[in-house]
Image 1 (cartoon, rainbow over the protein chains, first blue to last red):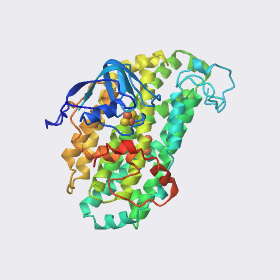
Image 2: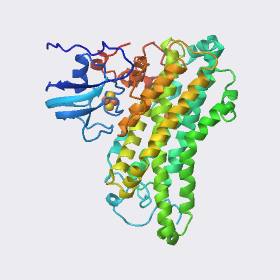
Image 3: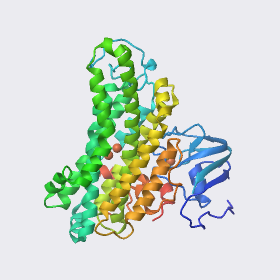
Image 4: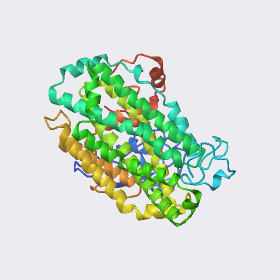
Length: 95
Length: 374
Ligand code: FES
Ligand SMILES: [Fe+2]
Ligand SMILES: [Fe+2]
């Protein structure tokens, strides 16, 4: 897989920015793993769907959860560690 | 009418709200209004651990070698953690069991509180191993003004709810169903909502601030056995705060109890104030911790920035606006210590003596480790 997106960690100000990233379906890879491969540092604690640390906003597209996660997620939110892209997805998160 | 240990009325569990409906009767889980609570129970049980499994002999040597001001930081932080888990080991039971209406939620509350008693026992394990005289440290928790002030703020909402519930439940059924009773019940719901918010603040903010102090020592390869225990505690707390976020969101959404949703709307400003106040208190506490000197990697300012960061993260998780402009996490190493898939592979190796923690070790997901950074 070729990846040209530059990791977003060049700025060093003290507040976080909202970032939007588009992802495509990839077999066996979670949204969190896709974002990490692109160089984003996404906060996580459990990677198992129970802590909610990786919660982010779903702007468009569709994800699926091979296993229903325990952590709360709102109507337009996803838990990045526990879902995979089904239809091209745009997520928004702070980083 | 007072609390009954086995409500003899026949009712449909699916018509019951989480709290203030019928009191529970049969502890049955074949029909569940909210299956999430049983999943939380199962997860919590799968986490079971015992503090005695973590060897602390090196921590004792480390502690003796710490300069005085760092001993003060370590012990004060441990006292605060002891206080918080003393509260959490009993208060969910005392405050919530008399008013809960769903068996799966009742059992989650009991399972949750039980895991807090493991945390409490682990502080004794730590102090016994690290100190020759642990008694004085425990005694200080009820006499030290800085700690007593913390106690007041973490118990206030619980205590108000407990008192009002006791009052309500000792009135006649006639009174409870009359005008006064209806007003009292609405007030009870308000107190419950505030209590749940303050529990979320306790577990999702106050505890995380204390974790930062524990891990700051381990970052310098000091007190690593202690950090090992705190990581196991942090894994439990991540689950607890998820449970509380579910309850708060169910309350706010209104399908569970429409009156509760009204109250949640009325309480939005109060919620923000509870978070703001807690953030201020945690910063005051940071100033007390570092009053005689900072430590490498952590001081009053940095811990204060972490308070801002974690407060905003928790507020936005509940659908509120951030208070502090969502600053970055100033302690990037916190994530590595909090990651529970690396509970098994502490950045610095610590002896683990028995098989149970060993069982946790064997669950290492090698895929996840590829991304593990120190
Ligand atoms: S990292 Fe815990 S829910 Fe995703
Ligand atoms: Fe705890
Ligand atoms: Fe807890």
